[in-house]
Length: 120
Image (cartoon, rainbow, N blue to C red; front, side, top):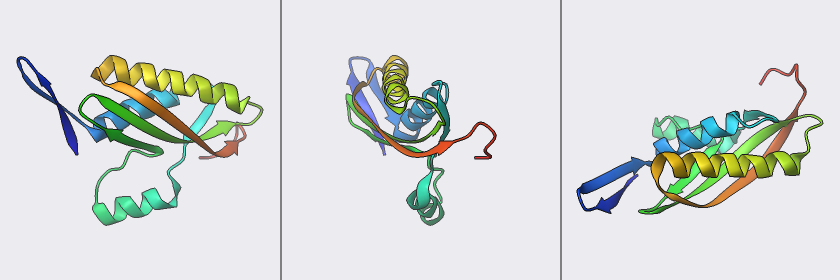
């Protein structure tokens, strides 16, 4: 669902998919992240709805705020807590800068560890 911001000159609508795309791109630019994890439920949602769901990213977008859930796979020997904090910061900054929305939370779920040679 697209939410809209009420402004003096009119309305601005930012679709959930736009926020998800920004968050996903910022996540993949974070060092230590091997991949985003789609999970089984996302595959079913994509099949049932026919909608292109952003892999590993869930968002809830309100009129002025957004909450983001990320499912990731980290590189082996990467300090998970450090990468997760950096990931939260990178995603928050990217979404807030590009959309003007206030990001109230960025939740990270580590679903796997990858060796550098793994095919993801």
